[in-house]
Length: 299
Image (tube, rainbow, N blue to C red; front, top):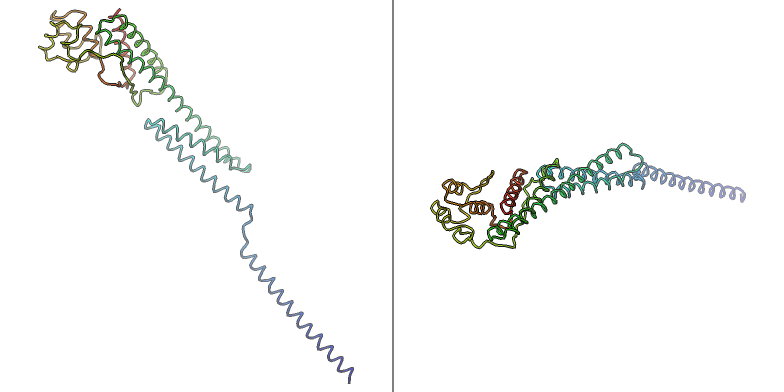
């Protein structure tokens, strides 16, 4: 009886242990299944894949920004806004360079495309910067020339022939240099027009002819009879021999002398503002010829 009881107790304990073991095994299996299922469903992106995605996004953004800056530069250049064009080209170059730095070695075709765009943009930027420097040189020459020209006119009316001759010669030579630069350049450096500052260190005694010593009373009276009493009334011709129409009329009538004709012709070119504008090569050539006329008359 005791042995049967012992065997029965032993078998009972084995069954309980077996049941517990099966239950634990089932729970573990269920947990592993859930974990596996969750893993298969979520599949989180690896750090390497995420890095590639971020890099691709940056490349697309930089390249887009470079192309937009390039288009802005072209538009500004077509509208003769060369400072704006230079800034936009510089930005495009910077963005293309940044794009190349983001690219890895596995994108040779894309790298070649961007390198070509970068080279082209650099060439355009160089062309704009070169034009800007050349235009600056032309502007400096024209400003110096016009300054000398205006000083020479006033000096002539003050009977300072030597100073007038020197300044007319300086003006003529500077205008000539500017013309050489303009004609040797493929671009139109006078678009937009070049406006120069003119601040003469000399002033006319008056704009009224009756108060200018080199114009005799007879010519002053004759001019007044024609309705011309001040410089503002005096017209300016654009072709040699440059003589204003009203002065030419007096000359044909024999009521004026050569010195008065020269003085009035020079005064018809006097500029009463602090700036002067040049918009074409013929306009610069005309000024050069006028300076040469003044030089010849004051020699």
